[in-house]
Length: 580
Image (cartoon, rainbow, N blue to C red):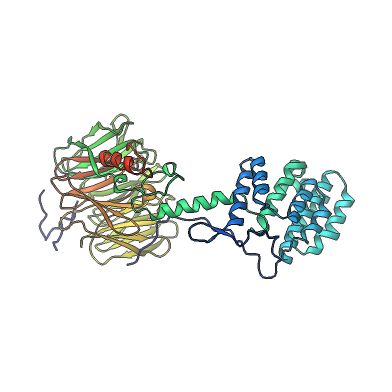
């Protein structure tokens, strides 16, 4: 590969001059815990002799609570006999006799009795009022259903109103007496006030309202297990398997073999340096562009093999980048300081050529709805066209550079571009407002995360920076270790929930970092020239592609040998064949 002289502006690959904070993965969220505190003013539920007994190696699990949660799970799963047997054998009832009586009275529609029993459970006045309101509202609606208007009015006036709970709701209920249609407008149909079904809904609402120590929350055991899996998943540095691969039988821990690290294929159809490549959104295709003035569409077979589908010819200069339409049916190719061509993926036919007199095009992308395209120009402007080439908008001035990645958010509101050597502009199309990301050194490329919340920025100083772009831009992580001195090197997000960062490098290797910790997980040898670009298949967690100056594309997958060997020795790791 030739190197541009220092006096030249950085082009395709910054053939330019020679030369911390961390955040948790956004998708690793945990469910909010359900409070088990009754408050100082509340009476404690009935206790059993096991209340002080603990189980487990650390002695922090109360046996009575543990058994109650299992009992609740059995009833929830429909194993009523097993649940009753566990209560009897353990001597630990799921609920106190008072709570059981209360719940039965609600089920039987004994509203006045249930309100009286509610006060005997030992709850705060606020909870008693809120629960009474729910019960009496159901009583009111059922009376209306039975056309007992006077009794319903008495319930509203003498029982519900004195509670002083939700005055707006009281007015809505009163309107139901005047106009039955009001019930429909409020979403209260006849079916909602009939028999067992409606009363079971009231019970569900009451169970959510009452403290967890009084009524064990529905699916509490499932919630605790899911939280445990979340913790294990979050602590797994190499986690790159789908949730269906998680098991309760053993603690989950992925190894490095869940990261694509083995060369599965070498694609050699290009005749010169491969500068760019990108998987389609559905992962069924891969597109590459080259200094040989062509682009190639590759097809990803169901067995993971990649084969040539179309060679796209017509450009008279090297092809800088490619961009997939939102539905993957079409693709854009951008020649260096030349034109943009739009192609049909199925046939390989060129559908349209976009150009502007006296101005070269250096970058391109699609509207989120697929009805238009945008482009960066050599005069530093950004233009938007419809598919037929009619110009819709154009931003003049210092909006882009000759090295210029561009992106648009999925809502179509923000266009992102490199506007100065060390500055990225976030242009709000609707508010006509700009935010800037000011970097410490020259920016060579960037990549937008799938959720549009983060920007991965490559710098000339051999660092990759992760920026949060929600609200005011904020630097959240840095990644180091790869080599970059002369050329544009591109990086990408990848893996499950985009938990990894991959990048090319001038030392002919592909580097992979853990997105949260910033640790270099792998450096993959194989190429014999600078690795210019990488792309992680969005539909296959275990497929990565890299493009190099050695004129080849490498398809990376799982290391099957080590994966199988690990599976035989550790039941917590599962064999994956790397297929979509």
